[in-house]
Length: 421
Image (cartoon, rainbow, N blue to C red; front, side, top):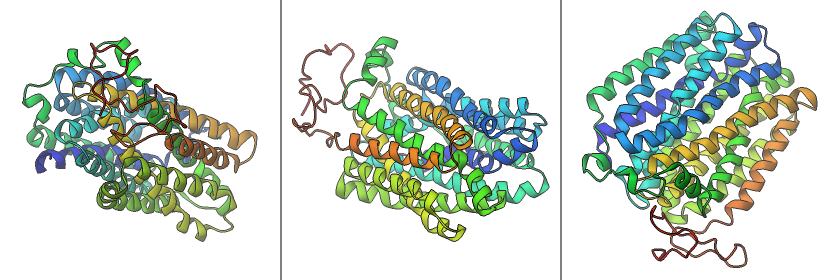
């Protein structure tokens, strides 16, 4: 398992990254509207984060497989600090857009943190380690809105200064306390031997079973979650007259539930039921939690519904990332996690745009219903994923759809994998 100091810095890196995201998320619609943005333009600015993350994530991942994780994590923390400083200084929509684009590019380091954990853990321990990283994400989402709501009283840009300062503090801690990952310290790193050694092999690795199914589940569930969060503030403002401070409390509650699930429960649940079943339950809860939002009759009911979709994400993403990692060879963890960030980035880009368009053009309830449908499809796909090492059910899958595990770059892809258990 990871050393405590290394895990602590990784925890802080992801927490600070998501804390900044959480600080901005409930404030951004109000900030953008104060600067003259329409609902569609609000979602465009939200999507800018994911556009640049989509472009940067595979580059971060592939470089980390070659030069190590630590160096790129330090660069990412510095870039995050810069992005939040720009957010604080934004006095027009263009600067606000640039700040979110810079934050998205820096956010590509999340995949590197996941690869760092994969380098230093094995088997089912990996789900627990990734769950802790997920808990850091949830804690950031929990604390971020509370910080943003508190400091927004002094101006909507003020929380950006706080986020920038936190990033710089974590940068200094990482420089002092974070060693290189075990994989690179032991001298085993050689990206040229991995299944993602070249661009062509990387693309082929992402479309083989089970990675293609896992990445599609990730895309659909993250699209559901992102579409909901991108218009929830606009919806509750219109239906329940909720303010930025109210939404800060909503996301704080969601973050608290996510921390409990990812940090303390998901490891035990995975040990008992396995990653595939844990992922399936999460997909079902997400569909239920998001689909029920249009049917709420008062704001009090929202507080009972928030834990449903918060717990769902706490179950889905650690188990999903563990399955992705266990299906990837040790030389390609950063590249494949970068690929997963591409799938997630597509969801973060397309879902807010679609949600904003549906919200403005059809009805304010429609984004939640479409999101719930996407999560339902993800549940159907998740039923196709067997446990690691188990053969796929013949009646559900094509004969070639077996859990083959990672495939070395030199092995032919059109023949059965002799290494499959």
